[in-house]
Amino acid sequence: RAAGMPAIKTIEDFDFDHQPAARSPIHALASGAYLSEHRNVVLLGPPGTGKTHLATALGVAAARQGQRVLFATATDWVARLSEAHTRGRLPTELTRLRRYGLIIVDEVGYLPFEQDAANLFFQLVSSRYEHASLILTSNLPFSSWAGVFGDQVVAAAMIDRIVHHADVIALKGTSYRLRDRGIDTLPS
Ligand code: ADP
Ligand code: MG
Image (tube, rainbow, N blue to C red; front, top):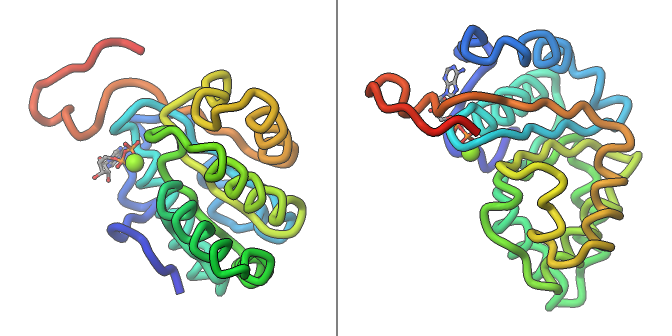
């Protein structure tokens, strides 16, 4: 049921001692109540702080609760919406996607969107607003999203809809990937 995930990660194998502030919000979210309230989750933080791990883990928890879950990167979502748009089937595709209780959009911000891509992504966010949940991850703070979506107005309208009913969790510190190798990253 949890299609598209890069690797199966769970909340049980996340080391919350490395992200103590995330412990209580993630455990609360694991109950799945946000899904029936059509709330969103936004995971922000530098590379390697566990955004994809926690997004996947919440997806696994939701799937175990019987939810239909789809996971893809922001770039992949845009490609998928773009293809539907080209075939004149964007409204049909957005309606179909609303049957998924949870859609995960990983890596918002790694690549900037073209204008068309930004508009398609905005339509995905709008179509789910107050109907079905999104989990988004980003390495960029909201204040930098205008640069991702190429347009202050589109970014503001999108952030408004995403965070109106959302838990925003900021992950901090150094990369967990580098931690075991004695390599430290610059403070962010
Ligand atoms: P991000 O998406 O923020 O760049 P990832 O979620 O991909 O980071 O994490 C990088 C790797 O480190 C993954 O293999 C992930 O499972 C692991 N990892 C990150 N943070 C933790 C943590 N607190 N406990 C256990 N594993 C972690
Ligand atoms: Mg990631």
